Image 1 (cartoon, rainbow, N blue to C red):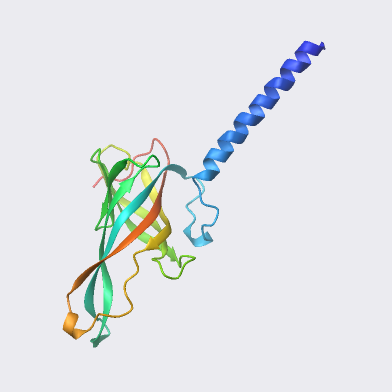
Image 2 (cartoon, rainbow, N blue to C red):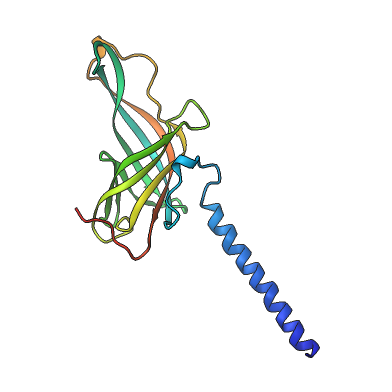
Length: 190
């Protein structure tokens, strides 16, 4: 083998290594390494996209089901806007829980698991599974959703009693939502 051939092969290997390294860095930068085991998605799923939410968690003061003389703040619904990684609004998040894109597609999910956030003053991290879809846009292939890196949103510890029954409050929150699926596969249509 001549020197030019070996040099070209070496150069290709270096370029391939850098390219592979960059791909790995990109994929791991969007997947949080601090996710608890019970919030991991199934291994065949791929990260479709990530969105940040900014909005409110809406709570209602209700009597506890097992003691009608005791009251607590119960989550009514989220009310948030969703933003892509460039800061552009891509949709909204509301009761259901539902995520709706500006393109009209929706995914409605149900909670499968939760874990306390590292900061005890914020709402928990969640794993949700898609149960129905509408439309053919970005949410049509979403099977799993992780709510991570939450800030705020936790119900107050007091202020809910018989005198305040049915009172609603809004608590500001932020979170990162990771949307997972198998590209090319459509979810169940509603």
